[in-house]
Image 1: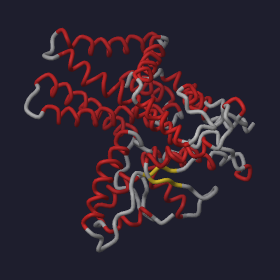
Image 2: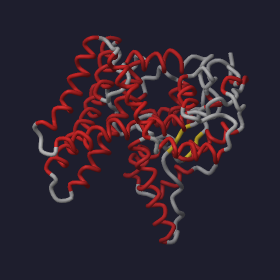
Image 3: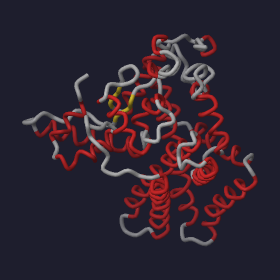
Image 4: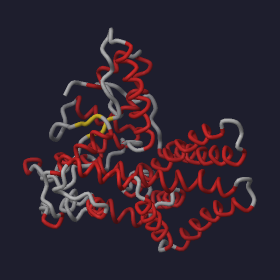
Length: 372
């Protein structure tokens, strides 16, 4: 594969940190412009999420001219903030790498999963930390994400085309969103007492809006249910579909430490910049694809350190989670400790890679090797 990130050097040097953020791929030797601590990362993420909710609420309740454009901005901020809360803050907290304090990590893990109407922090930890990261479970039929996809009909042995058709059916299925919502609520109702109080209070606030806020029912639907419940559920599925090549055989030569490498590739959000002297049509196409596809994917699906998820699995205890793109590139620059890194460019390409792999697997999940 040609070095796609290198083509972004056609843009001025002062833009390169933006392109590193958008694509998720740092340049060789590049160093972070900003290093967040856990408190600043938390504050920024909460600000993004709550600002999105506020913008959407004001837009729908006041319905000023072009309110629907403000609503779109609110949706992007809300979904981006929610996915950061779950996939970065809660994720790092369950790895005990968020604040450095086990108690604080548990506290903030509960807070952000309440705000995002996600499963309890304990349930999240059991699925991800206690199972997904276990060597004998990872990417096998026993892995919870694999079982989740199986229940949705993504079965090995189906053709790539059939898997894509299934994906679109699930994306548009009301039952998919309903089951996801009831599962999230059910998890919260079985949480710790103080968490249940917080959850009921948070949901109660939104359910009270129709009784005192103009257009309250519409605010409840458009400002809360659509982004926090529906869009976040779709984002989670898109992420899971491209996260790993599920059920793919492992390379025994990688040993115990880097056993995830053959099932995990970086997911970068970008495409090759047209060559110098490229015609206006090439630039028009690149601009449309970049800002209409790759940038939304980065904001709404492949958020935070997810482009470098392969680095996380190699070094799950790394303190460099706020600067994962740079840390991964530094590992490459100095000669990777493990096997060569792999990458795929484009969210859809990552999903397609998984579908191509799954199409070549056995027809029944139950017959898939466990790699014990």
